[in-house]
Length: 76
Image (cartoon, rainbow, N blue to C red; front, top):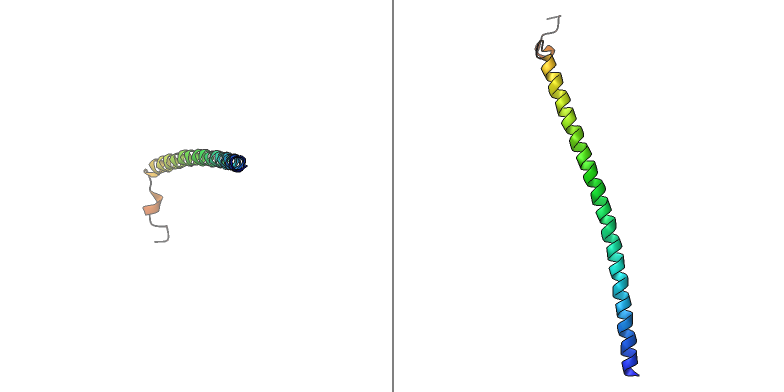
């Protein structure tokens, strides 16, 4: 009887370990999905920032002919 009880205990432990493993695999997959989504957002934001920098540079180049920011207003 003692051996049978030990076998049952070991089977229960194996089932518990398998359950934990499946939970960890699910959690790991969920975290991987979040990381992939965040990386896409980072890539999109990086492209957006690059476009903004290019737009600012292009705008700055157009304003070089008459830099309004450094001119005095007419009432001076």
